[in-house]
Image (tube, rainbow, N blue to C red; front, side):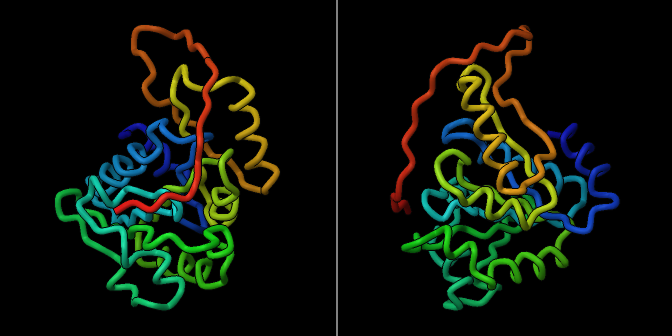
Length: 211
């Protein structure tokens, strides 16, 4: 994570935006783990960081951070709450956090709402880094929508859990959406081996409310 922090520091020197998207081909590869820990190491370096759970369907970053899911991003975009209600301070990690809020009827359409783009443009001026944990790429189109607003999209793969076809399709889908992939993070890579095996991986991704 510290190595990634250094790489991002160099990449952001001349960047106009400071929004980072963390995505993955499918669920269960450690994407949210990477998002939380990246926010923590950036904050530890003295950066002002906002972490946003952008998975409006099944986001659960609020659980390890001890925050309720309700009163978050979806409510703010709808205009039901003010920004200071939606953003929570996480003292133990020294960064701010915005949960997903309640699951909207059409998450992708909500992310296409003009208010979301304006919000990210404005909030990025108040922080050194804005990190968004987005839904998996192959499950829904949300990652492509959010990625167009950001200047750095990072893909998280889990060693041994993806077929080569899955890796190719997830990358192709983002590129077709016009998203520039800045880097790939291999999670759970064995330290003693340089050989990666790709197996079949089946997954489901659907609407599901969580507390």
